[in-house]
Image (cartoon, rainbow, N blue to C red; front, top):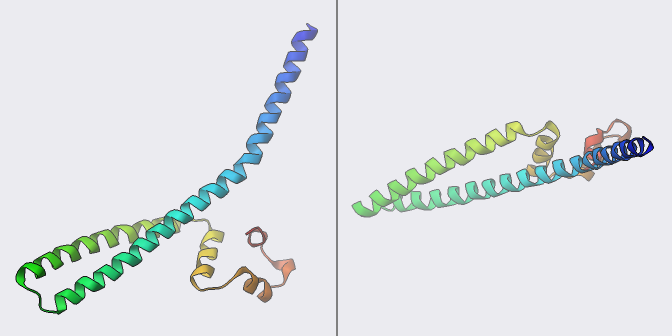
Length: 135
């Protein structure tokens, strides 16, 4: 009977340890997930930028009075670029809408070249949101 109680006690401790480990891993998993999402968004934004440059080049070809076959190829390429741009922009909008508010705020700061130090200098620390100090 004592052995059974000892095994139950050990199993309880092990379950507690597992729960503590899971709790300590969860924030790291969220951070990794956020980083992966950011990398994916950055890659999509880079691709959108590349497509816009390519679209401008194709537009230049069309404005230079190309031969009928070149014009047809340029129009086909332009349609493909527009389709891919629309798809990527929709994905970016959806991922942005799904982002937590503090992530969207960080993205806005990043787009406008505002650093965390700039924000800290503008706001007193005692009223500073806790999530920003964790960046």
